[in-house]
Image (cartoon, rainbow, N blue to C red):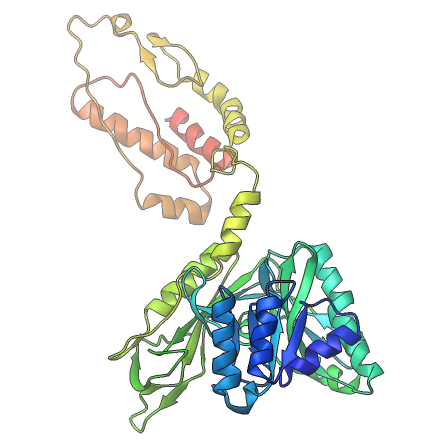
Amino acid sequence: EADKKWAKDFMLRHGIPTARYESFTDTNKAKAFIRSAPYQALVVKAAGLAAGKGVVVAANVDEACQAVDEILGDLKYGQAGATLVVEELLEGEEISVLAFTDGKSVRAMLPAQDHKRLGNGDTGPNTGGMGAYCPCPLISQPALELVQRAVLERAVQGLNKERITYQGVLYAGLMLTRDGPRVLEFNCRFGDPETQVILPLLETDLFEVMQVCCSGQLDRLPLQWRSGVSAVGVVLASAGYPETSTKGCLITGLPDVNSPTQLIFHSGLSVNKQKKALTNGGRVLIAIALDASLKEAAEKATKLAGTITFAGTGAQYRTDIAQKAFKIAIASAPGLSYKDSGVDIDAGDALVQRIKPLSRGTQRPGVLGGLGGFGGLFRLKDLSYKEPIIAEATQGVGAKIQLALQNELYENIGYDLFAMSANDLLELGAEPVAFLDYIACGKLHVPLAAQLVKGMADG
């Protein structure tokens, strides 16, 4: 990243897949190339370091030429923009794959996706990153293996061929195109904000990983990652970012986060003499949430970000981090079944078979039909009453269910429920002739439900 021209030339030398490009130190030549290139030369990059803001993805040729004038002509980012790289505009999803290396072995981390644009729906100017999530399901396992071989390992091997030993973290920013992954950039460091969602999922001790990278023994330490967990981070930025930053605004609502599933990482933040947190930069902090569901993690991280305020100017943050992954997951998911929606027909049938004999034991003259219908029928004339009046009573078990759960005694609950209902009718001078039960549950547990029904039948 310190010299994007050198990086592009390096990739070309060692056969690492990347976008077509040219580099320039003259504004007129750069603009002439943009207008005549055999591909869409709409990505304009300052070759040097520009705090993550030196890249313009232009919508058209005029916008790309304007970026050349600003970065190279006006030196908007100082000497960082004294050399320009003009690249082919690639189409696809952008993801980040980071790796540990000891200079020989390469171990990829879980893939993540950054959100570089300021606003929801990837609108507004480029930033250093407004949020990220991990792992990213947009890259397939075969494509990830290709990145390992053709990008990460080839980069380390290329450095060795040029007599450069690199130990540490190698960051590959990638575009997943129709022709396969293409490298957008390399960084010799962790990525921000990807790191904040990657490392909470690393189970192996990070210090041990660093040690084996430094000693050239990475191949001896297997990396372990948390399975079935997603992490989502939402960045809160000060007003005016990325063009300017607002400093000195009081930050309120910072939660006391002691949970391993909710984290706050500080960046552009300072503390005054009164120990009050103040904004002190563009991207101020990031709110992280972990959950087994990527969607839940995103909702929790966004909610956590919403509890934090910057006095006066307010905070900027996106509310759509990881939304692309949801849409793709929904589009590729098979249709919902009854069981997916919480209705287990097989479990219901199993319960019916278990309670059939219990139901038969409660039959009396007047009962019509059998088990499994959508309602109950009773013929009143079989009771031999001259002018029958229908009396009704309802009951619930209330807090007793807690005792039943603690002691795993469910028959007594059913017995008690029936007894209370029958007593209410007897108090009215009525004869109990029919009993309707309703069991509310998130998931049908057949043995438990059968015990409840047995208790009612015994009653």
